[in-house]
Image 1 (cartoon, helix red, strand yellow):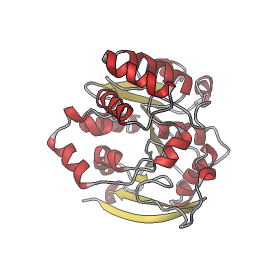
Image 2: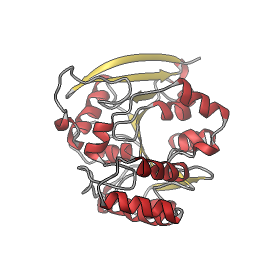
Image 3: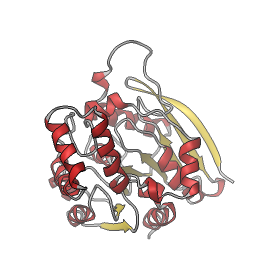
Image 4: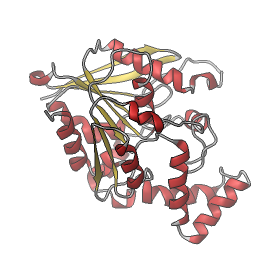
Length: 301
């Protein structure tokens, strides 16, 4: 039996929703703090895949400001000043402080991995004991190199549409959105491969995605960057990581397995796990092997 505690936490710019899930017998083990992707997304998919690990250690989920159950000030401003990496790092620090964590582990997926690294390299304390980087955005340049390769593997008419819409600044067109859907079903969330449990979960757990945050920090699509993350570059800094680290991704991930292997080679005490049959949202598509890899890494001696 799990205990669950939901709370709103004050952070710079508003309040974030958070949930602590724990088992009474293991509640004193180091907690796992989970950072979802986006920016602008929610914790929902991570919760589907990882919540059962609360049998072994407490798990903390939260919706980053502007997305999901988190709340912004009720005003008419465009909030552009909120969609900055530094503010999200300070937000994470507020969550860690709220739960009075002294020992904890940190998991981030996609943009959440970027956030995890920025916190690790910041002046904030305490630091995590172990780090999990899921399908990570570590270098926007390397991400786009992978994206361009994957785009070229799409059907010719889809690839042509992508290039033309991006060149003509018509990425809000129906044609571009259709092309995005085709790419996403291969490399982001393979909806055509999902089972009944996943499809029911998606239907029963709709959540607010903050497209303003996503566009401001990233851009129109996963494979076309125009936002302030365009210059993100942490590849060379990976060598600074001195804690056990797990890189994990999917066989069909837009964060390509070959690139994850390059990342893993930069970190001395690290592991790499690629989940067969999964893409970018492996924790949701293949929750059992994904959660097993996370558990085995965190409980290793």
